Image (cartoon, rainbow, N blue to C red; front, side):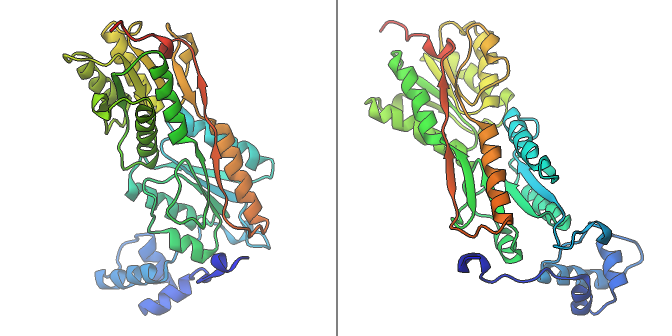
Length: 347
């Protein structure tokens, strides 16, 4: 493997090593980790300190199930939310490819909570997964060094990590958002509302930047844009757009930067009776979008290709590919269906 990938690699810590460092027997370590009663508080504290010091992970795989090469024929997949169709499509693509190789996929979601993210990754490691496909909250992860040291191949999806030494597969977020906004501008709109998620989420920040890119190219001052951020679900998006529509200078068009936000925007437009007068383009497709009236114009991502490309890279790493990290950007596609083609009102 390359020098970068092999640097500082260390073998997995064992329970015997934890016991030796803590000055107890392995049975005591087992009792502490399994939270069994009748262990002195001071003893438990020493054991947990040793666990953290050695970065020890419990092996939940029975020895009889382990292969001679040490592989468990399992992968870990971490996505934002299993409720989101985008994540579900990625999961299916990963699973469809993995099952052909008789590899099982453990999936978990973290709801953009960094603490839950780390807990999920450590749970995967306790199960000795062969590799990980991860969506993350922040670009920098505290556990990244452990993954590198343990030699576990990782592919990041949807959001790029700060460490360029890991593979990643993402959508063309900035370019897709710029295309969506330019589409609204081409139909005469200047007062365009942006509804977006928390800006500490990489995809939300990139899509906002694409929105501003398109305004700048069209000579529209960003002060004329209405931006509502921190919209993490449909209900929040609905409330935000309802307030904008009820203002003295409502938007004539809306760009919603993720599918759950688009759902909230649709509810707000219909509640205000504005679905035929206010244009809407959403980032990422939504179920039944083509059956609404008007149909919902979207910039569609390709979650199936993201999942397929990610698991393909992971299997390549598991097969010994030690080439430099690849950063794959999957194109988006603008799909006009009616809502994004509503013209701006006469000046």
